[in-house]
Image 1 (cartoon, rainbow, N blue to C red):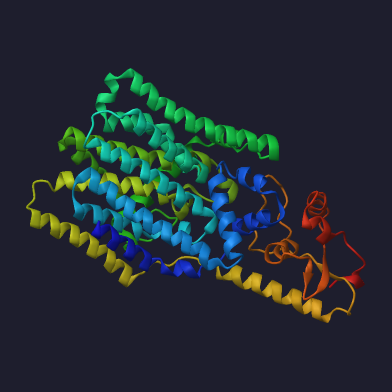
Image 2 (image 1 turned 135 degrees about the horizontal axis):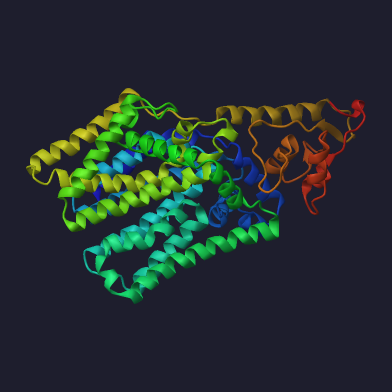
Length: 494
């Protein structure tokens, strides 16, 4: 659709500076792992409850082609985001039949300020790609709603395959999988009269959940991955109220940023504007549900449920731990990377609400309303823009660290192995399944260089933390086992 292409182009224009972003935190961890560990271990190592098989496969491919040049990585991010905008436009159009609402919804979501943190952090690319799979699945379902009262086995296979692939990218697919049977019943009410088909829907969800569970258990068994689900349940038992408040704040920020765009900042503190916006949205939803046709009501309920389920998973898994990370429930709501998937479903529901509430208006009045909201959002971009962290400090630290290493090598006596203190890097994250930080300069050399030399000189890194040295020097076949040495006499080091 032409409007989908326009919305995608505008979204790329708003987020074009993503191409100037740099690696940060987990990015370096996975880049190190891809350089120094078997590919199978990298693919099947879970992180934070996510099964990252497909995400890490894409990561490995891009790294093989681009090395440490960040531009191809973030070009992949931006292209995938543009594809998602077009898929979202198609999904809304299939459900509503309104090209104007489809373009408006895709635009509102595509330029939403909450997308910034997801787009500018490559390790979160899995969520972007997972949403691509989910949107493909629901586009297929939406197309079937206009041609059939029930889903054929082939449809369930297609939807199940997309959900399974999404679960290999990011954990948000699990929230969708859990509520899929309810969503299918809402969109295809005649399915309830066919128990065999309903069992097939439940089987699709069961297979995807079994795949996810198998990968999680395998990671714990083969690679000593922590039992994060057990930890999350333990935290939840003592912080149910925190999960609930986080859920509410996620919804507040999610709807406010969709409706107001850059005119409202998704700050950690809850302000009157955001609460008023949420109240207005809730009233509109209830009004639409009351007067809508059975089909439109089902669509509103189905996609609202998908959005709320995505937020609920975040709230349950992250909310109770907010205090541990010195955050409040409002801070969880304002964590921008938690909104990308949920908002895509919520904007579908909200566009259906607009369709219902404006049905009695003249076509010209509907067009003015749609154009007015689009203009309001675009004006917000012109006035305020969307600012986000492109991790310039990380780029500066890495560039400076490599420059200092070369200076140290140049200043060392010719012919000698150069010993350098293995200083930590603030930009680096923590290794999955390992309770010690990633060795700074030594790991950086593994990432940027295929050899243990700089300018033709052998280099070794003195690791003063015994726990870090023991952990990484004991890995058979690891380059760090050769690069790291225990503390040596001071005259041999910096």
